[in-house]
Image (cartoon, rainbow, N blue to C red):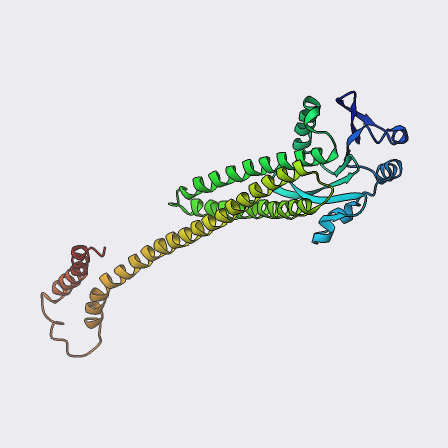
Length: 318
């Protein structure tokens, strides 16, 4: 699908167009062309009609820095990550491509992103705030950073909530481990997204094609991203602390179990010793023919078993 945002008489209008209509467009009126899951034929038609070079999907997904941002005499091309929430998976990074040429912007994306719908609404309501494609680019990135900040803040609150999780049962321990793993994956994805934004904004600040008023905006954005990266790093530290806390708690629980077995072994050791002595098969045992020998042996085993319990209780060991 091709969405065209053009400025006519000071107002910005949106229309869905076909490839056949591209040849009749006035590039001076175009502000933004949004390509949603485009076919190769649509990309080729846009390139020929507007004399613009667009990245292929393979090029947009490459991870080296030279493939994420490049600039020539006519274009600025950016491939940057946008967070997308998938059911049963969580957040993933999907690349969105931006190509800035002259006064208009071309975006290529392969998913329906709520942020583009919200920004398009803002663009139509406030056309004077977005004079050209560079301002549209700045507006989309700014709104994306605000949304990333909200996601990171919500994640931080969930981590704090998980730190108060009850760990009394085995099921609670298993769920707590799942919490930590999912939070670490999510935080890693967000941090990767923010680091990518840092590189893109740094490159835009060095570009001579960016006007001075937008440089100030990009400077503010990169400061915001830097603070979000610090927050993401703090989330990692908090998750490491929770993991250490969980392991310490598990170790304490295991030590309690081992302590019980140790105490039980000590309790039954003296009675076992007495039973072993009188269970020997020697011919001469003085108590063997004694009428009170058997009750005495039972009495000694009971006393020797209760005595360690009394001592442990008095010392607070049990």
